[in-house]
Length: 262
Image 1 (tube, rainbow, N blue to C red):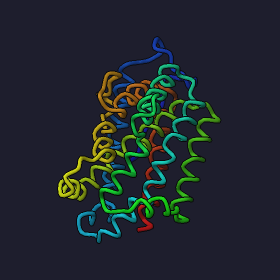
Image 2 (image 1 turned 135 degrees about the vertical axis):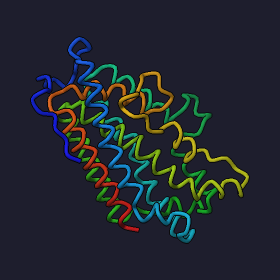
Image 3 (image 1 turned 90 degrees about the vertical axis):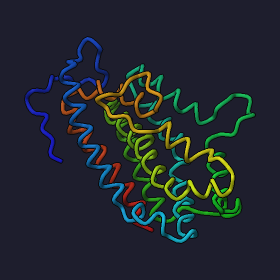
């Protein structure tokens, strides 16, 4: 989708956009346009043949997808730590810290981490723990992870809050929720048959759920909504919409590359 930010953009080049420098109508307009761009990208994503066939592929093939997808999940804390290191917007830093710390729910060690919950769900779905732990990333999975880390480390090195928040929200929350929603069309019946509640996929589908940028609020119950409230005001930067679009496009390309291997 073509985007024109043009001459009407305020010349705000700092990665941190002060509250008193924000032009609310500009932010609103750009948020609406950014949402339209994201809608288009998500439509392309969910049209992928893996999702189109998710309820028909053999169980072994489905588990292959999930076992490889686990390696992307293992990178989540690294992505968020790099984001924290590169961000300059204090409210954004605090929010990203809060989300990262949810991965390890309590300091006592009594509550399983989200990574442990993922293994629990994989075993419930039919993988053995030996299969989970013995699995290794394919060359494609490893390449996607390497390029994803390169994307966020470059944004961090440039202290680019807009790109960093776009990556964290889209890569770490929005796409995850959409993916797990597609998985759930198959998984739901499997967990029901096992008489067991999902501890990882279903909760993440909900709390990562996509809130449009135009309506995102800091009090949102979803991670994408809370991150989106910070990201929306960063769209006031010069070239904000184009930079948002280019970053999300690259993230989508990498995620599609991951699924193309199956």
